[in-house]
Image (cartoon, rainbow, N blue to C red):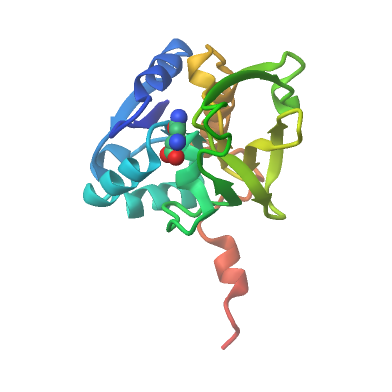
Length: 213
Ligand code: GLN
């Protein structure tokens, strides 16, 4: 299975190491052609303003949206979460509006520029997730289709999922937390080999919705 890691800026190396550690073939993504045949994609942390410029410059926006719309799973961490949001507080244009949430950048202020916390993430089992936050965003609003995967003690939403898109405000790859990447590979396997009856057939719904002539 081949999973891509967007390798234009930021903390991509740790994601690549983590995926290799669980036996995945990692494809560094800098150009649209690197996306061909991928079963999933990681958008790492970094600086979302720098990343959005480079995504535009290298023509990656449309092709990454196409991959996600085809159903390939995408995991975004920190700046990656910002790139996936439909709404960015303060009015920045969305980059890959795949996740119906409003995110606020650098949400924890100066004193808490970076911090760590143990989080309950029920979809990953009973062992808490040790989460590293670095100038992290927070999810201020979640749409109806969005599942909340984790909150801080004060209730702030810091991990979400909407269908094939998962995003965390923190960096699982910096604390050796491998379960989000395992979840991504499980979803990627299902994307590559849809089970009988999963409904992933060429445009079945599109046809059903076509107006009768
Ligand atoms: N503060 C960064 C941004 O707004 C995100 C930080 C990170 O990815 N660690 O893009």
